Image (cartoon, rainbow, N blue to C red; front, side, top):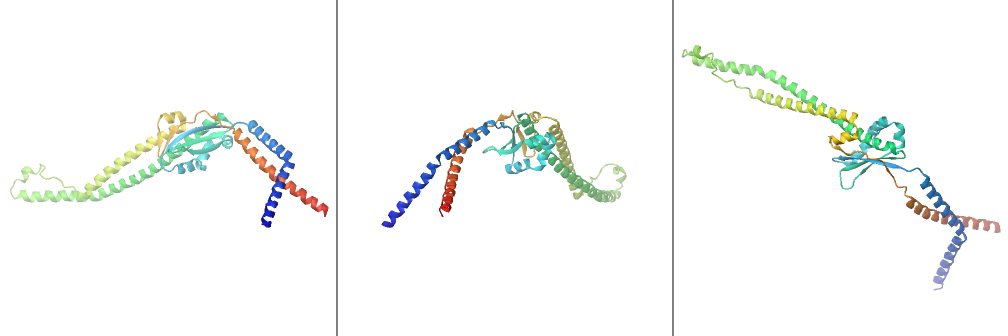
Length: 302
């Protein structure tokens, strides 16, 4: 029982010492909180305001993959080339997904509102141009494959043409032998009395080459359309691209960047953080100073 009383008494002494330290350092703590909070508020107010501008694109599939590609050096180098290195260095580029949608916000922010909307539009346009070039490249590869197929079919057809001629000749000879015995061949030989039978392999090759040529024409038209879009993206502004309703592969412009809006300075949040942060820092520093003071006094007494 006496031991418990001693523990309680020691706790009371410790708490009393803690409060005494805080009380003795109250001026230091209040002054530290006041100065830090005042400096924080002043810096927040005096710091030049930041602005942001947002364009929107609609994507199919993995939004994270599109985000990574938008922020990749491949795209950002194109943006830097068109906007200039100064704008690129002074502007922050970020991508955010709109909750529960397939829409990505393409955000440019910085202290120069006059360049932010244009930078966002250039960023989106650069991505669309990149996607268009990828599509053209893939379609050209597919077109080369189809051209090779057509050449192969044409060679096969040339190889089978003697078999077609031979088939017709054999049929004509059989007809001749049949009718010559009845002395009527001379009367009917100039008329069509037989129908040429097409070799099945030859027929299949002809059908294949027809389909391949249709695919070739479709790919050529698609490449031509993509090249027109590519030219439009390079020469037109974002509003013309939006009005054209262009969708490249799995990306479509949803809205161009509007006028930049001023971002909140978060003055209240910064003051609250400064108050609590400076208070706890001042309290800790007070105990450190008290410990140093006690250590010096002990050393001096010894």
